[in-house]
Each structure stands twice: as C-alpha cells, then as structure tokens.
Amino acid sequence: MSFYVVQFLTGLASAASLFLVASGLSIIFGVTRIVNFAHGAFYMLGAYVAFTLTERLSGAVGFWGGIVLAALIVAVVGVVVEMLLLRRIYKSPELFQLLATFGLTLMVEDLVVMIWGPDDLLGRRAPGLKGAIDVFGQALPSYDVFLMVIGPVVLGALWLLFHRTRWGVLVRAATQDRDMVAALGVNQKWLFTSVFAVGVFLAALGGALQLSRDAVNHTMDLRIIVDVFVVVVIGGLGSITGAFVAAVLVSELNAFGILIFPKISIILVFLVMAAVLIVRPWGLFGKPEAPARRTPGLTVRPWQPLTTNERLASLVVLLAAAALPLVGGTYSLTVGAEIIIFIIFAASLHFLMSVGGLASFGHAAYFGLGSYGVAFLAKLAGLPMIACLLLGPLLGLAGAVIFGFFAVQLSGVYFAMLTLAFAQIVWSIAFQWVGVTGGDNGLLGIWPAAWIATPARFYWLSLAIGTCVVVGLRVLVFSPFGYALRATRDSMLRSESIGIDGKRIQWLAFVIAGTVAAIGGALFAYLKGSVFPDSLGISLSVDALVMVLLGGVETISGAVVGAVVFKALNIWLVSQTDQSKLVLGAVIVLLVVAFPKGIVGILETARDRLRSRAPGKPTALSAAPKLGSAE
Image (cartoon, rainbow, N blue to C red; front, side, top):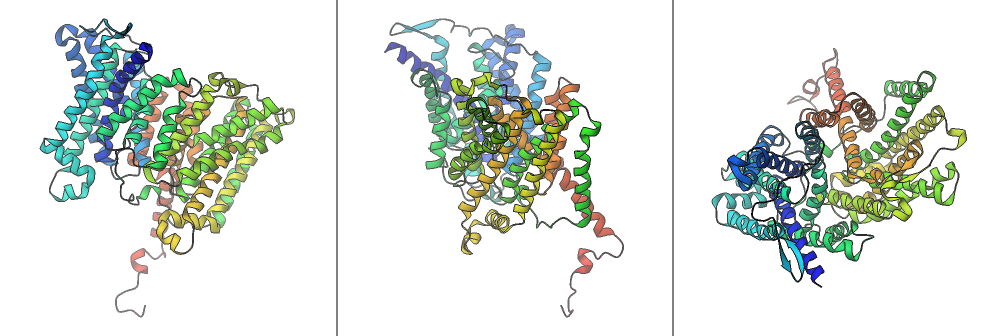
C-alpha cells in the first residue's frame, strides 16, 4: 500500500511541471487562438538557460535566482517571437499557425544543439532539497514534495492574477469576445503580447524546474508537447482550472498505467482524450465556442478543368518522369520512388483539406496502417506482393472508417486534435505491442517480389500507381460527390437544406483520403524493406501538412508540387548540412508568413495578372456593365 501512495505522490509532482506548461499554452490559446506547437521549445529553452545560469553564474544569481531568471529570459525571447512572427498569422487558419510554430520548433532544436551540444546535461540538485522524506517506509524525494506545493501555489497565483487585476479582467474578456474588447479601445496587440509572455514564462519555468529532476536534452520539447496538448484538450482550451485537473489526471494515468496496464500504458491518456472530445468536444471545463469563421487558408476558388495546354504540359512532365530510369542511377531512382510515394500521401491529405475543409493533424496514422497491413500479410500470412498491395491498404481503410466516424462530428481545432489523438493511439499500439509489431525494432525483411525488385521496375510501378491516384482524386474533385463535399465545406446548413447529408459526405471523404494514404504506406513498406512506428508519428503528419502548404492549399496540383519540392529539399539538406532542421524550419516559417498561397498559388496569381494585362483582354473594370447601360 505504501508503494502506491508514493507512486501517487510522484504523479502529483509530475503533474506540477505539466500544469505549468499546459497552463501557459491554455492562456495563449484562450486569448490569441494560436495553436502554439513551439510551446515545447520554450519549455526546453527554459531548461537549457537555467542549466547555464546555475552552472556558470551560480555565485552571482544563485540556484533559485537562476531558475526564475531563466524563465524571464525565455519570456523575453517569446515576446520577440510574438512581435515578429505570430502577429502576422493571428487571423490565419489553425493549419498555418501550427506549421509556423512547428517550423520554429525545428529551428530551436538545431540552435540548441549548436549552442549546448548534442549530449544530455545533468543539472545540480536544488539547495536544501537534496534529501528524501519517509512516507510509510518509502523514500519520497524532497524535491518532489516541493513540486507538489508549487502546482497549487501557481494555480492560486494565476486565479488572483486573472480575477483581481484589471489586466486579468481584460484577458478573460478577450477570451470570451476579442472583437468587443477591441471595440472598447483596448490595444489588442499589447494585450496579446503580454499574454504570450506570461504563457512562455510558465512554460520556461516548468522546464527550468525539471533541471534537478531529469537530464536536459534536445528532444524534450517534442516529448512534453504531446502531453501538454492532451492536458489542454481534456481540461478545456482556455481553462486554467481545467489544465490543473487534467494535468493531475494525465500524470496519475502515466504513473499507474505502467503498473496496472503495462501493455497499453502509453495509450491510456490518448484514449481518455479521444473519449472526452467525442462526449464533450470543448473539454471538461471549457465552454462551447461559436462556429469558426471561414478563413482564406482553407477555401478554394471555383476550379476549372485543365486546358489543352495544361494537359499537354502534364503529359510532358509524366513522360519525363517515366524516362528517369533511362538516365538515372540506383540512388536517383530510389529517391524518385520515395518522392512519388509522398506525392500519394500529400495528395490524400490535400483532397481532405482543400475539398473537404478538414485539416487533419494525424494523417500519418493511415499511411502507417497501410505499411503495417502489408507487413502483416507478407510476414505472417506469407502472401505474394500483389496480394499484399491490394489487401494491405484495407487496414488503413478500416482505421479511417472507425476514426473518421467520430472525427467528422467535430470541426476546426477540435477535429484536428481528435485526429491527432487517434494517430497517437495507433502509434502507441505499434510501439508497445512488441509481439506483433516488433515495437521500436520494427518489422524487417519486407522486400518486393523478384519480378519488380530492380530500382527501375519499382520506380515505374510507383509512378503508375501514383498517376492513377492523382488522376482518380482529380476526377473525384469534379464529380457530383466532389461538388457536394465542397458545398458541405462552404456551408453545412445550406447544403443540408438542399438534401445533402453533410456528415456522411465528410465521413466518406475521410475514408477515401485515409485509404489513399494507406496505398502510399503500402508502397513505402516495400521501398524501405521494413516498417517502424515512426511511419505513424506526428512528425510524418506534419510533413504532409508542410507539403500541402508548400504547394498551395487553394490549388489542385499543389500537393504534387509541394511533395516534390519538400522531399527533394529535405533529402538534399540532410546530405549537405548538419543544421537541416534549422534551414527547413526557416523555410516553413517564411512560407507561412510571406507565401501562404504556396508555390502553385503564386504561379497561378502571376499567370492571372499577366492575362489581365495582355493586349486586347478586357480588365475586370472595363468588362463591368456601366451605369445606365441596357445591361
């Protein structure tokens, strides 16, 4: 019994640090509506800066002074980031915000390695808290007791800040209605900046306080951000009390899950998150929000079928791609096959986002399920390659059917977070079910059949399947189903008034997108000869989002161009520099801020301008009917 008591208290200590980070994210989202993926980076920076201050300047500032000063320094960094970057994307869709802050996270990861090195750093023990206390015969570290006290103290301080100060009243008002606060003459820019500074301070403080508990390393940002998203969603976006309760719940699930349910311990928190979103989408302590306003990032102007010239250009590109084996070597063919596979993956997400208006943050789940479907059939059932390619994607289809049914009941950031939860559930199963999936050792020896094993033949197979997929999705876009899906995206109420079952249409689109992603995953398994849980991970889902954004959400061919440019750039950067994340992150941030329309969108805009200026072409003004005319 004493062991379980200590385990419970240890869970409360972990909850304190988790609450600090989650409360900061909740405050930022509640006011600014920014889905801040970089929050984990600020947590990591807090730990690294605290290490430097407590080790190099301990005589000047002391240990506790170094902890607080580190949080203040990172808060100043957060203010600079908010003023230079986030102010430009406050009105952008959640997708753009997520990608911009993810790009910032990539940059910080490489900068941290450049400054502090790749090795783990061990901080000193907190003065006066180096021992342990006896709890029913079990030793409980004194520092854990300190953290258990810190959590409620910070919660109380935040309550006083938001309920007993004018600034807090304005923040709570902005959480409820930002437009009304602006109408009352409040400077929203500085209000948002101050809120972001407080949120970053809390995240950095949470990281700094971990210095005496865990080693500091350059992967701690992604490790914490997933749990923080879970806490914020369960507690309710914008609710500090909800963040505290959810942090305790998640920490205790992590503490006891490994003891009671060791086989599914990682899955538990995501199961709880999915259940909360399905039953109460706005969280335990959150409040229902008004429907999100339509933003230009996820809308698509009326599409036109390809012109004759565009069809000829597409055919030339396809023939050039088909001729690559005649001039390319093994490496170029392998890279080409991988790019084609990711074209399939990006095209599936692009179809869901651009036509359906549904931004999935966990689309890699279906890509990975397709890979595992092939691996199971090849390794366990011993089926030939053709049968595996035909039947393997059915596992992704099944996942899309089940997860999509629940996901399409939600919208906006709640839809995105539920897709993320489902993806993490699948990843957790693949990671922990070692007897079937191999865990992090993966499933090896999944090689193509002899008749297709050469790089050239596998490349041609990938190109044929990729072409069929892209053409098939384009046909769907201009089919009655595609028009019904776009009508549902533009206005659910209007589409239902003319007899369109919007939720069923969205569910079917989700299933189609998931199945297409699984086809790409099936090919990927044969390309690599192995399958690992990474094929289901968050990073791959974000890669797909970057490809779509890079090409252009508002375009039809954006996914193809985005996948080609992103994968080629990624592969080239990895081979050319050790700071590939820094460069790639900077490219993502620049793209979101300066070129939100993507490569294809920019080219189409330039083409339209040239056409409007061509001699003999009527401009929009000259073509308009004049006052008093017969028209």
